[in-house]
Length: 151
Length: 207
Image (cartoon, rainbow over all chains, first blue to last red; front, side, top):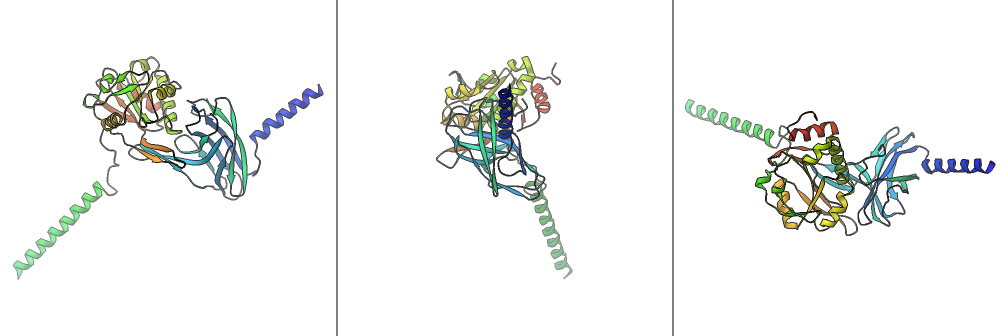
């Protein structure tokens, strides 16, 4: 009985720690998700909301995951003619009390040179590198036609 | 003397008028008063000419789309963000249309035929609404198709030998006669998109 409780307690702590942050307490990452990929030739993506609950600006400058050789924040933009293009977004500054949304059709984490396909139902760890520390998050992989974590 | 003054002032009035005309012209054409450049509209299917292959290997072209309303989107399967999102949106609209989805053509045409073979398109469209067809073909025929739809696309190199494609990401709606009706732009909400689609059926409110 005691062991069962201990197991449950351990599981709880583990599941909490995967959602919590290692690094800055002021950076809150909400609703992370990724989309399943066909094979490894195509890039993967990750979306999330990054909130700065601190009192000083933070700068997101790097991404790292074991599953991809290269990870960068990219920006999709669509001009008046309806033509969409995508380019690295560079450093992203988040002001105190503000948030940045990585969402379809805008900013997104681009995961290039995938080492294995992102399978629906799995998850992977993604490290967000800020100028003064790192935040590690767990990103669940949703279906190929997913539009967000609400579904 | 008075005659010279008259000529001079007439000349001056002329110059001022011309300058004003130029200014107004600039304002309307290139200046802040200009309409946003939307580019020419897609041709009717009957005026287009191209031969492609659908994801099941059947020969297809613009004539195949005449007779039912059509929804057409250009993209590529290596596109990580906007293409799967738009196809997921389209799938959501088709779900909302119910049985009407079966009475229209919904086609996803690749702008990256070098990587998007018919087999690739087959796997890709299988993840979305079952009525969506995937079309591909030779570079030449894709160029002819995009010209008809007034779609632009461009290969852009990325770090590490890869490339991505810039491309027109609007969804085009055509009526059953094959005439272009309107576009649905990226991320228009479902309650705007679905009535637009029903519009090409000649319906306003679903029923």
